[in-house]
Image (cartoon, rainbow, N blue to C red; front, side, top):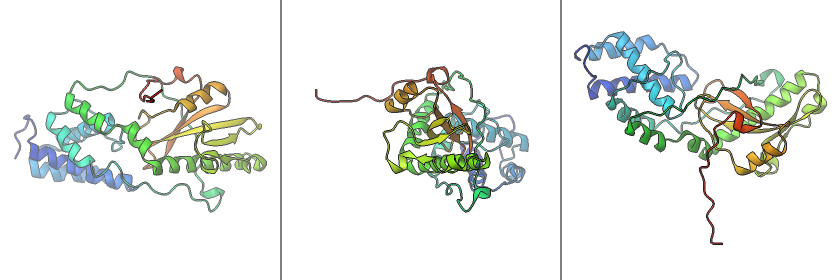
Length: 276
């Protein structure tokens, strides 16, 4: 049994992380597990109080937050985690960070289609940077922006969600004529246009959506190509980044409009190498 008030042993930390990820996986699969049952199970095994177990779960949420992954609902990140927790999460996350996402929006009829209603765009805030070098190494290893860029399935699901959402939105607004003109440009013509979806406002104004999708939280970073940024500058009144997040659960979204520098911290991250 653990001594109250002492640091958790490596074994107890492993038990807590294993328990958290059991619930995390169920949540990502659309279930709503009862956290209290898991708290009590770990409490009985380790001798820690139920409240102490809950706080440890919040520490795990903080590690997930730092690497751009969603945490369990109701367990807001608590960032004063102990060193052993980082290694324990790293061991577990290897088997989860490329988990399969569900298929995108059903297409049987308009009543089945999820219409996305974007939220307010988040304001720029100082980045979450830990003073712990192991935590920052883990953040680099599981770079969420790179993860989402490489995971083409995630990107396609997001584009498909926006495509069908736009058709449903215009149809429900009585603009079937415009709904028929919505185009999934990146699928039909390939990448390179600077946007993924061509849509419209109900008054006929064109909208060009570059869809950025993540399984992570709303502040998860993402990559923006030079072509996409150039197009945003060329068509500032019509271009929008359609940011989808928490796609592994119920997808949520917000829009980012030009000038992008007002809403995002843009940093160069890739170099073009040539021989002349």
